[in-house]
Amino acid sequence: MKHWLMKSEPSVFGIDDLMKAPKKRSAWDGVRNYQVRNMLRDEMQVGDLAFFYHSSCDEPGIYGVIRIVKEGYPDHTAFDPSHDHFDPKSKASDPTWFMVDIEFIEKFERPVTLDKLRVHVDKLSDLLVLKRGNRLSITPLTNAEWRYIVTLAAK
Figure 1 (cartoon, helix red, strand yellow):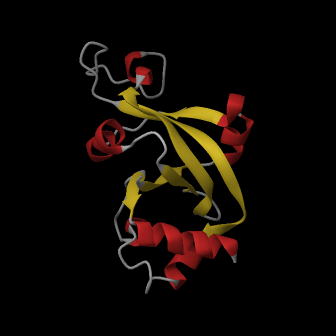
Figure 2 (cartoon, rainbow, N blue to C red):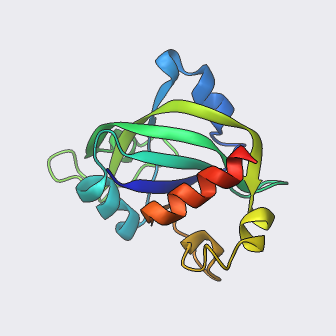
């Protein structure tokens, strides 16, 4: 099993939206970065766990845990001209973009904020969300990073 950090703007889709979704499940669509697309398509597996990270908000940070429940498949929003994520170059017969399905597992009582993660940079020095200039919406985590952040969430 792999671990991930998946970022979304809560004004677009936050952990509370996932909690309200039917069966507390949703597609993770709209990714338009090739590196992240490759992770969605090739690396994410059913059962993998991820932290749900809120970005571009007053208090960015990790708000809870989600699980991958469907492996990568073509992102149909790329084929819909009326959708914000439409990509005229992506074709159903040869899709460019992929998505996974996720389900809600847990919302933290208090988020593990970006500021709190920075305080623990000695233990999280390789955490990509702490790297200057990193804009990837999904990043892999090591088992050690996952376990450490879980302990921060429990405090």
